Image 1 (cartoon, rainbow, N blue to C red):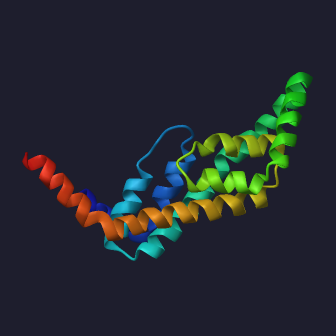
Image 2 (cartoon, helix red, strand yellow):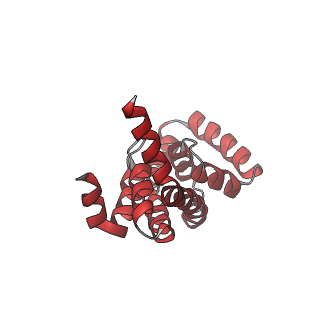
Length: 163
């Protein structure tokens, strides 16, 4: 039943799964599972690209929250603004694009990066580009894992249930 619902949404389901799972800050949602399942039934490249695009767009919420928080932090407390400037200088020193890409492409907690980039005023265009590259890689990997590994996962669960 769930599989039929996912297939009826098709590629749009991959996009929505990626976006919704990224919009929810600090709450894990099953976007990866949806992309894995859709990757096993549809073209995994299309599923991965649309899932990654949706996830990158969804991550802009954290960036926007950070951007709004930046204005509050500088208005409310000058010490916080100095602390934020120190962290921003360290971030700039260690290749921010590589950091954003690494967090986007791995299971590391990306929400903190998005909020931080917004709070420090990191250019939104650069943030989105590096996020998109990382999310595309991650979601392509997940969709391809679904394509090539879904039968193995199904057989593994049938062996576990049968015991």
